[in-house]
Image (tube, rainbow, N blue to C red; front, side, top):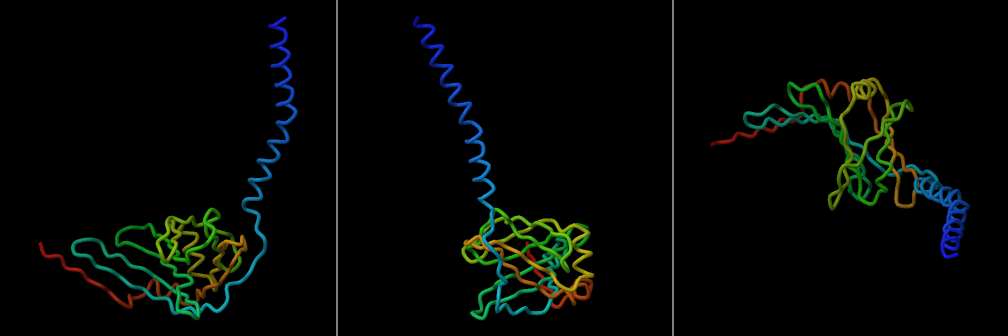
Length: 191
């Protein structure tokens, strides 16, 4: 009798769990998809962009590092976005970094597109007290699009789960990247 009561209890628990399992699965799927459900879009306003610049660094005895960069600032003077394409002498790999304000929703990363073309996702890598940095290796395809393009669209997600976009000019990117650096900083190390 005891054995059959235990068996009935176990069988009943299995039935209850089996009946609730699809509901639990649906809830977790729904929660996961709602986590990234955007609530709308807006364009970042009042960002003034400077010119593309190429700045190089020659550390003593090490390969030269060059950055092709542009910055955009809000009317307050705070940096809204800064883009670096960093390349090292004798290295074919370029790295793309974006410096953005703190307070963004980080899991989606940053989406980039050139002239409304294919999207490239750049993950956030770390945050400091005054900026968050997204960075990754820049593929040759992306670099080619940047050189031929007219506008780079940057899309992030703010804390209200709104997609926020801004567009940076690319008209001078190719000439600046392949041209002579505007500034070269040399560091001589005495041992």
